[in-house]
Each structure stands twice: as structure tokens, then as C-alpha cells.
Length: 316
Image 1: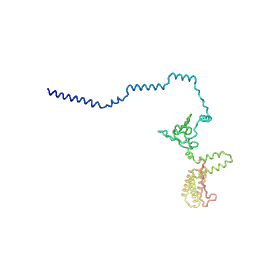
Image 2: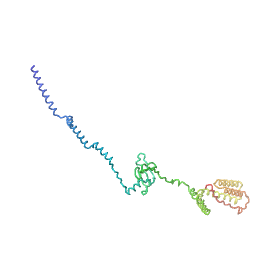
Image 3: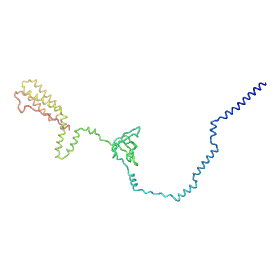
Image 4: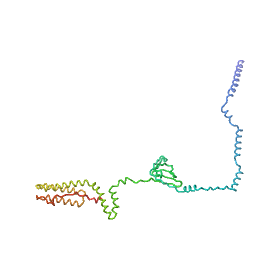
């Protein structure tokens, strides 16, 4: 029993020491939240700040009675409006500003960016500066380039808006495609409508102009005609020199002559030239059928065939 009491007294002494040390150790340490709370302004400080703000606002504020008195004073004595006299230079500027501003330049091309219209440009011919490129939203004199579209430029002045189209150039390719014959005919038309005295000169001009066309278009035909005439001359000379030919050779020769005449007719010749060829064929046939050994007379001798000229009246 005595031991139990001793043990209890020792434990009680230890617990008393612990309870004494614990509040001493942890009570000395400072808590952050407590420090922040202690640093906050107190209610008294807040009330004083609010009172100071109200006092400052009251000092700067005008009382309603004073405001009404000032308004009544303005009603009784209104302020006089001072009219400023404009000088002569101001008048001229006003007149110029009232005049309508119109674009005096031409548009020769546009570059349009659909994704970013601000990069669109236009090629203009401005008096005094020549041709140069301008961007959208740029100034050209007193005019603003509002929009640049495909083939169109929208220009805005202080009062009006103008739409300028791209200047169209003449189609030089179509002019080059015109044949020289049509251009020559167009140049001959005023000559034909002149007086009879000048009609001769017009005819002369027409002849000198149309000659190269004949030579160019019928060069091959002339060569064929010359070959055909040479063959006809050879066939004409053979029966006159050799009288011992058989009937079979004469028939072959006549058939050959007819074939050549038919080929010659198939070319582009006129009706009169075809008749001449028929007459030449008949004369050659008569020479072949002639059995007299005597040579042909001078009149019926060698027949010279001049190469016919094709009829160009249909072509004209």
C-alpha cells in the first residue's frame, strides 16, 4: 500500500512537470494566421477612414442651392456668342472644299487577293507621276482607294464614291489576223468612190496590188500549163515530120491528146480558155488525119499556145 502511494506521487509529479512545460514551449511560438489577423485594421480605424472620405467628398461638392442660383443667373444673363470673321484665305479653302472631287487618273490593271484584300493593288496612270502601283486604303491626291477588286477599283471622296473599270486595250491579235487582201480592199474603197479623173489611178493601184496574189496562188498551175503546152507541141511536130506512122500509133496519139486536154480543162480556167483548148485539140486532130506528105502551111504551122491566166473575178 505504501509502495502504491509512492508510485502515484512520482507519476503525479511527472505529469505536473509535463503540463507546465507544454504551454510554455508552444505558447512562445507565433502563429501566422494569428499574426495576419492582428495586423488587420481595427473597427475604429475603419470608421475613421470612412469619416475622412465623406469629409473630403463634402468639401469638393457644390451645394444644390448654389447650382440652382448659377442656372438662374445664366437664364437672366445668357452668354453672348462670339462670331469669328473668316479671312479671305479661309473663304478660298471653303470654296475649294465644296467643289466636287472627281478621279482624274485611269486604271490599267489590278491584282486582287481574295484571302487578304489589304494586299490588293491597282496600276493607275496619275497625271504628273505616270503609271505606278497603289495599294488598297491608300490616298491618291484627295481620294481614298477604298477597295481593289478584280478589274474594278472603288475610289471614295469626302462626299461621293466612284467605281473605275480597267481600261480596255485594242485587240492587236485580231488586227494581225486580217488578211492583206481585205486590208487592201478596204484601202481601195475610198479610191473607187473618187471622181472619174482619179478612177484611173485607182485601177492602176488595184492591178499593182493584185499581181503578187496571182503569182503566189497560181505558180503551180502555170508550171503545169507550160508542161502541157510542151507536150502538145511535141505531139504536133511528130505527125508533120514522120508520115510512115501506123494507124494504131495515130489512135494512141489522139487518145493522148484528148487525155491531156481533159486534164487541162480540169484546172481553174475560164470558159473562153476552154473553147481555145477545144480549137487547139481539133486542129491537132486534123493534122494527124491529114495524110498529105507536104508540110503544113505557114498559117497552119506550129501553133503557139500561151499559158492562160486564171479568172480571178470569182476570187475577188
